[in-house]
Length: 98
Image (cartoon, rainbow, N blue to C red):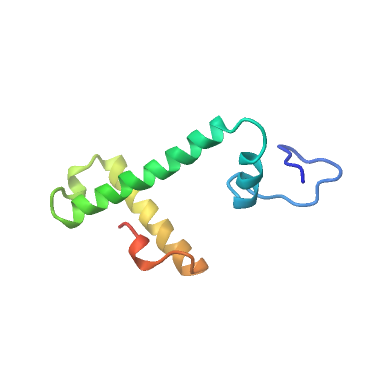
């Protein structure tokens, strides 16, 4: 297997950079500090998202208490999660944050 950042004569398939197979390949090769950091960041984003959802559901904060950009990002992620869940059937209902 090879991962290329541009088309090559022998390359026959194009996948996104966040494809699970690509990520698995990249994290299994050489130094992984960047990929470990990226994975930790993505996991931490989910923790923050869950924390905000818990605070919202308990009425500790209101969505409108957050800056407008934060509101938009949270709503967009919630919408994307629902779309992904509905199309792929990979997430459970309780994983939907907003």
